[in-house]
Amino acid sequence: MSSSATLVIFPVRNEARNLERLLGPLLDVVQQEGYHLLAIDDASTDASPEILHRHGVAAIRLIENLGYGAALQTGYKYALANGYEQLMQLDGDGQHDPRFLPMILQRLQTCDVVIGSRFMPVDPLPFSPAGELYRGTPARKLGIRLFRLLLRILTRTAITDPTSGYIGMNHRCLRFLSMDSYPYDFPDADVLFTLIRNGFHLRETPVYMYRNDVGGQLHRGLAPLWYMFKVTLSLFVSGLRRTGEEQPPNPPSP
Picture 1 (cartoon, rainbow, N blue to C red):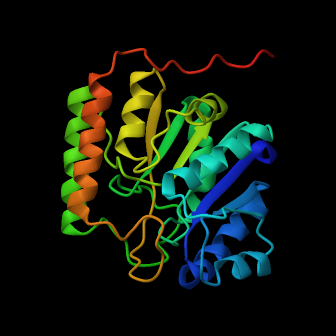
Picture 2: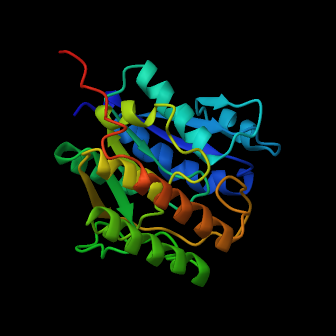
């Protein structure tokens, strides 16, 4: 896979206090590997746009706050329109370690989607963690366990980290997730369910995820119980749909 055909995106919503921590290591990896980088600024009202500009990061700025899922799909559609063969995404709050991007891309050669899992052991250690590792609050862990169970029941597939925002995908998956059926509210376990149901091959790879207790509004702020209820409802609704209702687009002609 050509690194120049790879786009790395990260959504941003008022992450000024976290961007400096993220951009240093992220830009190091992107420049070293030759990836292209794009921020999706979901109508931030803090200094996030200025920080991105100061670091020379290309950004799409949404004029209204559309939410996490819509910000991600904006990046997908941009990648599709600009001919990228693969895309990797991580969150803009600094919790994901960018040093794992090359490993995710390498794994993507044998599947359609790679999920960075905080629960898989990183062995052997390629490098030391850069901060305190994070596996979630008690409420978040409860939700993750619930989604694991539902995915196993509905798809007979074991996913250890179904809410991970650290993901790589190939062009076929990119086209599929650019369709109008993409769930905007909580693109987590229900997206994985839809991908598995439609024949996409998913793999996980171990990554570091760090604790972050400051700033940011893109993927936080909703009560965990409400989050669990919405995603669980979405999974059951998706499970009731006729299998094959959403088929992945055919690969483009060579």
